Length: 526
Ligand code: KIV
Ligand code: ZN
Image (cartoon, rainbow, N blue to C red; front, side):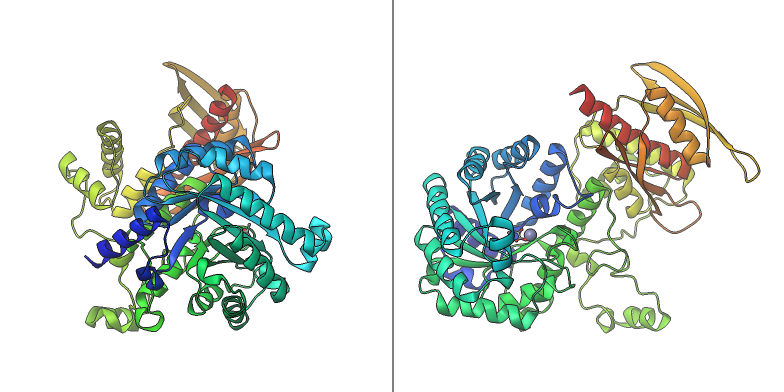
């Protein structure tokens, strides 16, 4: 009920573009997973993947989705445009340097949005102005004002960021913020671009901006913290206490270098320590776990096990003394419940005798909604898995669901493979793939069974790839656990990722490699 109230207030405020009185207690969540997060090496996503992530962000209730940097590439433009068209319940933003051509590109991509926002930025620190922009501060101020006014002419909502604000002269920040607010900026962002500041210092900067910018009541203060010194979340919290009304963050804390402030951490701190901060967000926290898993599966980058909130160990109590305490009373060692982030472990075991009905129920309770064709395909995979594993856990089902490739046609599928390997012989792999109802088979020797099977796939496909990354982990405990493999392959400077899951780790590896190869073939055909 409480959540519905906040959600309704937020939607209303977004639609009317006014600063509602009730918003004073609500910290707006500006999610930049698809922009700052996606631009970090290793996290790139294609259009379908970005759309899937954007849908999840909308479902979670983020206030703003920064969908990309429209001018950066045709791919970025297309993703911003597609997200702007589809997402109705969040503001959709596109980043632009303070240049007309960037702002035009952002606006052209955002036009179809229900609630568009142009986000424009220019660096304000002496270091950046002198060495990067080679501009005098007066010219920077003038350009910022002109470009905010230019953007405001196109779009009802404009955000201005003073890049490297935490290393900028506070006096210059006051002047530039006052001027851009006059020119129509509704959100003024104070980024700690290089993750240099500390909580006390950053809180002081935010308070000083509130104190010294005379028209600050006409704008919302936003902050955007990087994690180079591991302080992104602490700095963001300090800024909230000092009066920031919007925070920029990413799922799993991904982003440039050491990343951005992690959304799940900020949201759960505000929820768990409500008595301390007195602030809420519009996030449905039960969607957090799913968002984190989805991002990991789309990017192929797993979350570190001890990561706060969403790491595999975040709710695991290993020490006997802790287990005893939690069993006696959960609050002894648990400050929040796994259920509050949407992490459920069903008590009802699924196995080879479970029917389609039980499987469908479980898929739904895990938060997935799939069409009946996908459901049939997933049910068949579940049956195969249940033949190999006595107990199929929720984590196994999630791994199956997430290993589906996002709308990439499977040019080649794995039909069968045979491995001959040992510690005194070279490994040999025979792989048979299926393409358009025809079988293609080849044999290769290699440095171990995985290497040999990848080489056999290369021979069938007729192209060679470099294996840039290979990661394997067990989905659950137990000797019959599924292996979850992520790979990244490259060829001529371009990269593709793939993922495969199976109780046989060589099969999981071939499936992952094949899904990356299928991505390559799909892009080649396009
Ligand atoms: O880190 C940064 O300064 C940014 C801005 C463009 C907001 O990402
Ligand atoms: Zn950034």
